[in-house]
Amino acid sequence: MHPFLCEVCNKAFSNKSNLITHQRIHTGERPYICEVCNKTFIQQGNLITHQRLHSGERPYSCEVCNKAFSQQGTLIRHQRLHSDERPNVCDVCNKVYTYKSSLINHKRIHSGERLYSCEVCNKALSNRSNLIRHQRLHSGERPYVCDVCNKAYSDKSVLIGHKRTHSGERPYNCEVCNEAFSQEGTLIRHQRLHSDERPYVCDVCNKAYSDKSRLTNHKRIHSGERPYSCEVCNKAFSQQGTLIRHRRLHSGECPYVCGVCNKAFSVKSSLINHKRIHSGERPYICEVCNKAFSQQGTLIRHQRLHSGERPYVCDVCNKAYNDKSSLINHKRIHSGERLYSCEVCNKVFSQQSSLNIHQHMHSVEGADNCLVFSGSQ
Image (cartoon, rainbow, N blue to C red):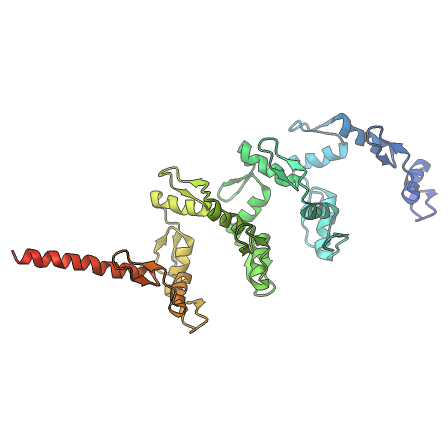
């Protein structure tokens, strides 16, 4: 029985003190004031917990890993990480969560509910923490700073992941291939390589991706959006990573160095491909003829020989090619552009291969002269 009833919302309580505390939600009364920062609270217990932020007191310790917390509830939720207890179950898809708040946020995926709206761009978010992180995109605020290299982040979890680059810690292991990762999200994306799961689908062309960010980048092909611009030449890009790599053309920066021959590269993937020259590794195999390649792009181009696919079409004469570079060379026939010049006779060519053939003529002429001379002896 709950004899104490709130006159505003009719919520019932078993004792009078709980009713008094509850009524402060309606009146706005906050009688408990922090002496340090003047923040006010409805309940004395909330003030006591808050004061621990100033004092640094953490009276609740985990018996497994000795991590300390200022609130008992936070300790209880933390302990579920060790026990793998996930008592909060979604009644729509049966997905389980350690925290009730995570379940509440998850349910909004099913309901489509978005309670929190950005005042700058009107974007709606399903939970308050996402709104706070989103607002930092507008303000440029990066409150989380690495104490090793001073790199700053707008999101605490990203900082935690970054710190592992210094410590070398990789706590997330793939159960299939045992590869270890510094961030849980990276592990989840990696696991989709094994399961071939692609939950992110383009609503224009139905192309599916294992990673949400890749879908976002892909959609810009349809929209033509290029939000990342080079400050030097104003060239625009659809992806931030592409802009970063492009900037190295201006700066000459080549941060990726081969440990065997010291050759340096501006792009990490180029270094990975280069290392296969030394190792002889050819991980990409054609399913038709079993020919192996060191680069995925080379395999894709090779597979077009079997399929007959020619996705690169000239917009002048509609001639099609299976390779983008071949289309670029072909277009120079229409434009008259000639980039390659012979050092012997200064004749210019639109393609490197044509120059190579031409230069061979000079070398053959020299060889013929030698043959004639030797035959006259």
